[in-house]
Image (cartoon, rainbow, N blue to C red):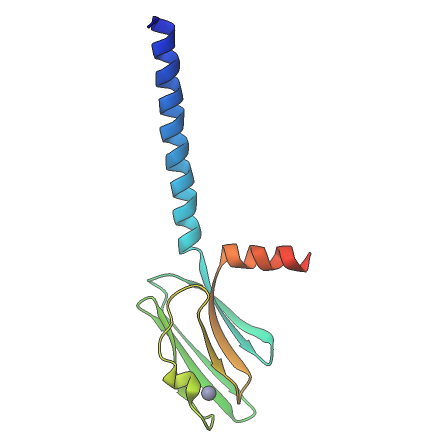
Length: 126
Ligand SMILES: [Zn+2]
């Protein structure tokens, strides 16, 4: 094998390893790019960036409809509500993109979405 061939192979290998690293870094970024979107009557009332460190409490208090959303330890849950079925509270905690808590009586939803999912939604709208 000629010396030039060796150099070429080395360069190809190095470029391959670097791009593998970049792709992985982007992938990892996407996974941590999560959002909690809280909607009431189909309107987004609150958006939070969602990571393991996020600690937030959101209280919906609208026309005697109360839902308390708690975000902590990488989980989202409705801890209190005054709806008649309490399904939103019984749903428990969600933690993955695509998961959703629904309070039908209050038309209230809490969902975890990734930016990737949001981009796909944008594509559909366009
Ligand atoms: Zn409910």
